Amino acid sequence: MRNIIHAITLSKPEKTPDLIAVVSDHIKEIDNKIFKLPKDLSLKNHMKVLTDGIQLCQLVVFDDPHDMGKEYIAQIDFFGNRILTSNVEPDIQWYKVYRQEICKNFFEYLIEAYHNGMPFDLNGGDFKENYKTVSEGGPSTTADAKPKEEEKKEEPKEAEKPKQPAKPAAKPKNPPSKVKRGKAWDIAYYDKETIELNESEVDMSTAVMVTACTNSNVVIHGKLNNVSLTACKNCAVLVDSVISAVELIKCDGVKVVVHEKCKTVAVDRSSKTGVYLNENSMDVQVNTTCSTSTFLHFPLKEKDMHENDEASLGVPE
Image (tube, rainbow, N blue to C red; front, side):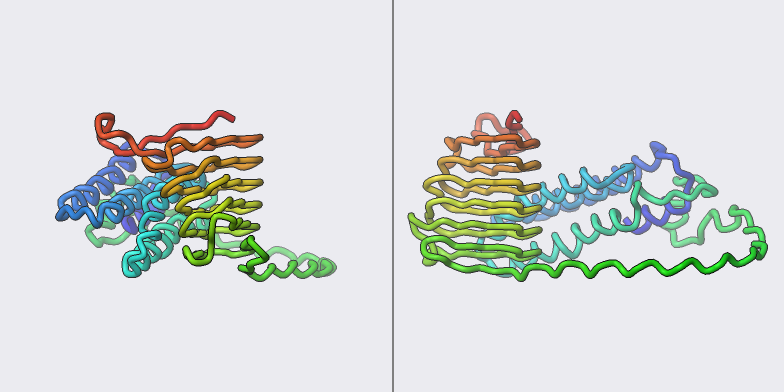
């Protein structure tokens, strides 16, 4: 990928078939290497995570990688969440490093560095030739093609502008908290964390309320009464069994993963919600109010399987 990005910065801003072909061949090459690895059922989710992560390479050919990048990260999380709940510490650490240090950092690198796709060079050369040269370790093919910059003439200095008043200090962030009040757990203000409640910490009368968390996972083991998330962004809640409902209110990019049973999932004024079911939770009722992009992900029966063993279904707004 370094060679592809380097070659793009040396090439004219044209999304030629050569560029798309190079990226596609790169992805296929890695896919084939993964496919040839020895098959191990205990590593099924790991292989899926690797395969989904490779798709991030496609972002370099998009004018705007923001939305599609988030979709690819969500695909990684689908199988990654299964690893997080496996309780196998080396596997959990492997997934966290792969997701954050490789996939997430690569995506954030593209977003921060390039507001509108990759930085092509207006005076650059042909991408195919540049990619070949860079891959072989040669020098830039456009080093001599760029016109010399004209000497800048000194311009009279402008009068100093009056100093603008200092901006008010940013409001301090609320500290993360995990507190039990009576029969309810109150979890709030976590960022890039995994919050876990063990089976001994919940029972059939327990409620869990998650508020204003970002980029975090809430993992709940055992059977409890209900779970609610309010004003959360890019989070996942993983539950074993919920008697009443999982509620999402004013959330964005939240995933709900049900391992056993859940009666209802209620989505209110939220967007980009994913509800992930298994064969034991197919009878869940999903209610949406003023919400967009709500999707159900569920396993297919063996007779319906083709290349994939899962399917997705959009919930009407």
